[in-house]
Image (cartoon, rainbow, N blue to C red; front, side):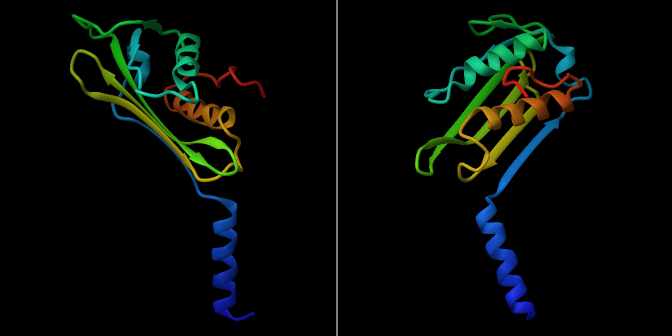
Length: 150
């Protein structure tokens, strides 16, 4: 097989398999473990119900999730920002998700996590949220998520 055909075959296989990226960065040495309370900013739209799933996850990680922004934040308070984007592939699916955790008092970014996948090949919602939550948990020293089963 010529090198041109091999290159085309590899390119076709990559295109058909979909492209997924998952990345979590902890930008502060203490990570999320230095914090106790978190306020989750509500996105304008949450068609995939990411906020309730994130709230459940944060509670399971030991955080107190509060329902309103902090007036006078403590050093142990976080603000979580959620941005989910949907796509179409025969049906609606969660195409990308970005989570950003900021120290409420200083505004410093503590941890960020992002997921992107084009196409339905890794599930519509739950498998994607599980992947993001497990990566976030692993990089911050928490056990795997129990929210979506095995």
